[in-house]
Image: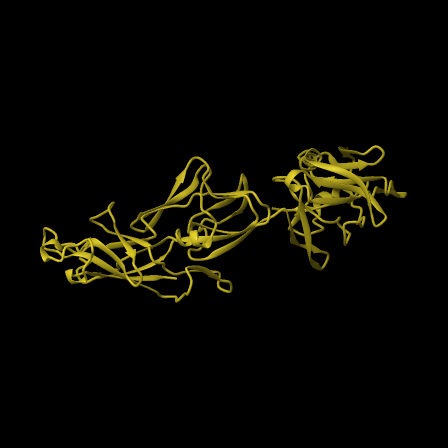
Length: 409
């Protein structure tokens, strides 16, 4: 997705509206002609301003009338000429060639780019799709300039299924990405010690934002990390899909089978609970009973899933409401999220527990293993009806109880 620009001097006969037709007003003090034209071609032909190629993961771009390109050289920094696209050419009436050969630099859409408060539209991404390039050798520019520009950002395509979100990006322990500033190598990433939202929206939908390529990033939703990169960061000119949702599916390896398991989130920042117990095929099945040691050490759903922590079950008790219900003749606890999560719920069958003499308290109580930082104890969440009661208890670990996994993120 490289863009090639050709710069050429404009003679007085081209008749700029801001320039006199008299030759002496179209030259500078060194008798150099003023005014330059930029003819832009796109090496990868595209028909739209901002779109993407699914099979290649490439973000595509085309110029629009009114687009600007900032041009400078080693003697001009930190000053820039601004070339404006008038249809078939980019023009700058005040630009002029240099007396001696220098390296020239070009930047789109400007030499400074603010990446905060993006609207999330393709049009806005096109206005922040940073490109930079330089001449391959020093030149005065008298005969025109040839500069190949390349992308310096990647695009996040965010599937927002939640509603109200804010996206910020960190590139260090205490700095947030704010924008880009031109340098001889392309752009520096400008940062802030305070949080900088790149996107803030209140409705569900698909949104697009530009982020710096080539540096390590942590993409965050509020204070929660969605994805983080390696030290090399994201690839410039590529797009990356991210999903922010309160329900979804993830792969589970159960025995020799790979299956998609639905997950449900019940509160802000909470874990993503599997729809059904280990050993079950749907929410109203009891599933299998597991002893404490196996529950802690074995991964019956594979590496994508883990046991909830004791603290997460305590948060479930604090952040959710409950109903004792019966589903397909199976009694159990319906756990319901609050506020914007009120449409999300999970069903925990009252499977009781299994001891040497067989299953006990089936349909009356439920026991589900947790992990805990206190390695000498086993803990579980337990609930019962009449009266409805939900609490965390410690357990010797010898009884066999139910397992409900959460997504390992």
